[in-house]
Length: 240
Image (cartoon, rainbow, N blue to C red; front, top):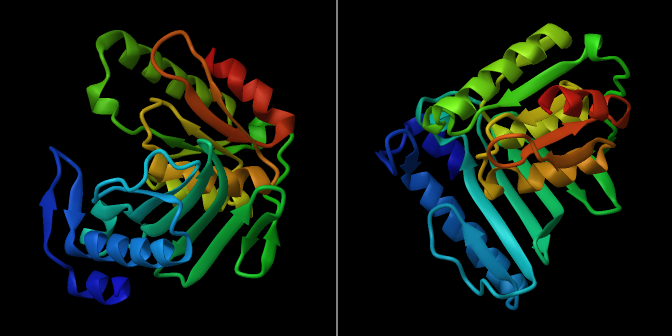
């Protein structure tokens, strides 16, 4: 379904000034909801395009039918399907399908992280000077003057202290590539990332050996930081 739609470039509409939704988003979410509903009739269902089902349930499935819709609509390969299971609000299982590469990433609490059948353990960076950090900046255009100044200061500080800063713009795939070792760290510098964008990735990064926590900073919401334990505190200190 999704591969054919990508090649054919399905019709799309704007949800707001920047966010797109396509027919394929809605079709994929309906398909996943239907299959999860059949297997887990007591679980809640949350997604990007459709109304929540059983929001009071202890177990909640978070569905992002296409993480990176703008890429998808532009026929770029940087998009994925992301599904996570939350237990009492905590991500405990994550699955990310890298559609165009034919890769399936999955992880569950205490069970490890995998690319297809291959276990993942990330890259064990121990010095900031060697770190490739993926920096996500969701909603940065909405920041007020003081928070924007903080954001810009920290972004420059990162570029001066790590080997390289990248900004992939796909939370789910960024998390997967931290789990493989392509990235050493993941930072959300605005704190405005949507739960469905990174819930599955949270489990993948954590089970691949990263320390994944939200850092309370001087202004705005907590910022997500994921990195090997040996450098996590040093990166946190850059945000404080």
